[in-house]
Image 1 (cartoon, protein in one colour):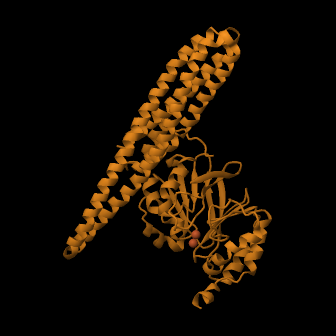
Image 2 (tube, rainbow over the protein chains, first blue to last red):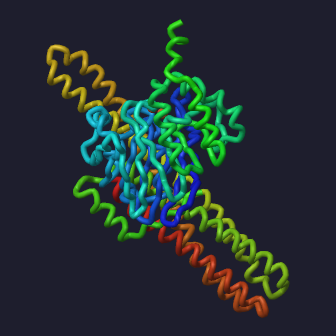
Image 3 (cartoon, chains in turn green, purple):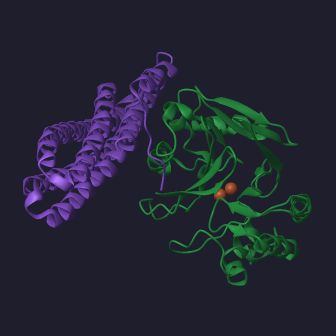
Length: 248
Length: 216
Ligand SMILES: [Fe+2]
Ligand SMILES: [Fe+2]
């Protein structure tokens, strides 16, 4: 699995792990992000059970096991957190930050050692060694209990499934041509995002944040003006409408 | 490129303590070993580079460098063998971690099956067949895991021997450097660089062996 540090703050850095060439072909490709401070490591969207061994190996290149103290799951999907049962065995002491709505569901992946930190609907702050990450509500985008993670210092929005693209092969990390890129996003957003109201509400909320990088869980990362281009594109896109096509 | 981790012996004590009586899963200890020994490749490379530098100096030094020159070939061979060993340790311990995860999943499956058999005694014969298959898979995985374990152990011994050989060559390097007249200073520096890198590798091997101890 490829991993590299993408952004460096005063006391922390962001790392991406992904583009795993060893993953079984039929499972969707995912980006895992990690936030590393001096003494702690947070894994955002730890990923599916099939990816666990590669992901553990990757995380250990950045921190010893006992410094992997925090996991974050934006929502309950298997590609986000079905590896939980194995992390639960692996980590001596850790917390999982995830929506309160999904606690009873996520625990089905197996959890007897890790502590579940139930995130209230309004979100809040995830504090990691003095670094404050904001939890931005993104409910119904697509999951009914869902959060993004915003880093105000580095101006990064980890947007989970929002901004996801399904592109064949091993695409580069960053969007290079936004217009071209939309064709890999359209179906995903039309079909997986269920509500125009929720979508417009999210766009309005996110427009108030100063974002330099928008990092989704699938596909390429948006930077600078492409973030605004994405918000404009999503705003005009009618979502939740693919069902009409699907039923035809 | 990830940072090179440097756990110290006391960090491992701390790590063991953090699990509060639970034993450290084999897949964690072996994946940690893979990460912790990654830097040995880097140090072995440094040794090879130092040796190349020594070659360049001795070529210029002519008569003065003859003694040192004879050793560089040997150093390079050991350094490249160490690099191969270090890479193989990484690969084998990652495989060990992967098969230990699979084995754990199979064990969980077996205990779930046992519970089902107790809950539904009438159907327990059918389940017993599945359990038998599972036990065969487990035995195979166990064998695979042990195979990787043995490989890692053997490679650790081999890289340790390489490092010991390097350390003893450094003594010769110093003797030869002292005979190199105007090139003495730079060859001393090279001997010191080789010694430092060999020392770092030794430390990593000690950590590797300690982690191996957690794997049994
Ligand atoms: Fe999802
Ligand atoms: Fe997803």
